[in-house]
Image (cartoon, rainbow, N blue to C red; front, top):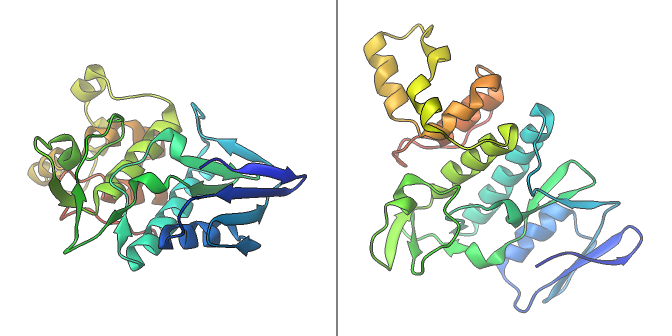
Length: 224
């Protein structure tokens, strides 16, 4: 659902069926009006994320905004299996909102059901990538891995190469942990963490790293 400009400074998003997802979107947009099939909101400009490289500050806003939206969905019993670049809009250059209702999945017993194949596989979690039969159930935390993956891409505009994998996370060798513990920790992380080298040891880095564990049971979102 793409926003449509009504007049200068005023936009609308129209949808066929109302749902709790659109309630969360309306909150994220600080909507001035929401009906059963439309949201109206104020904005001076709307952009998309296509091939956009974000600064640290904008990446921070992206992660916080989308994570807050995810938390709002989780409170209503829903999650998102994965994100794509085209799923977001940027309001006034700094407010990020997820608007793709088609990926919303009901959470049951901390799991979401995947019942049809996805064409976009660039920013998916290991458990989603490893699905071989449909329908299948995966952790609702698949969204955390995908959010961190897409954030890493937006920071660098790069994808993982074999050269990066061979190089490894060299900047973490100075860790105070024992070599064995460091090795175990790094093996638990998705390769997407390799793209975060330039922001290593920042608050945002640790937030994203916590989302990039291959094991969804270890994965969580927390920003200090």
